Image (tube, rainbow, N blue to C red; front, side):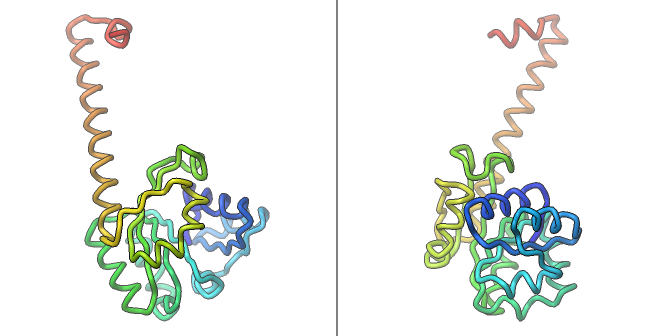
Length: 198
């Protein structure tokens, strides 16, 4: 469910690995493109949930996910399903989603993708996951297609969100520091070639 650049990349990796993949997206063009690659096109997220035991959700944000759930009245469709939630959100949204899925009879693992779509399935892929150990174990073969060495953060469902935020904060701080260093050099008359060489 969700076929942006990352969701489409996930679907393609699973199709290439021989999985039967059902796809749904609000824009049907993306569904059609993947159907040409061997995916089963779904007319609604209800169809996608009904067709599979494991359901990967990769949407822009939890607002989009809530809208899909409410618009299509999905609550009763979660029973017996394992949702692999790869939508970015806040800790509060992750906790809400976990409770909502479990309250309606589903299992959930939550994660953060820490790579570009073209890195999925390679040694450069990075996937941070958390959830109940039996659910993570059941999802292992799917997760390994996406990230051969995915990281198991245990049963605290909040951990992928916390760690991904910490990693992004470190990267952002480094970038801001680097840009500040460039500004200092430019202001002081130091060439960027000289700065970069050292």
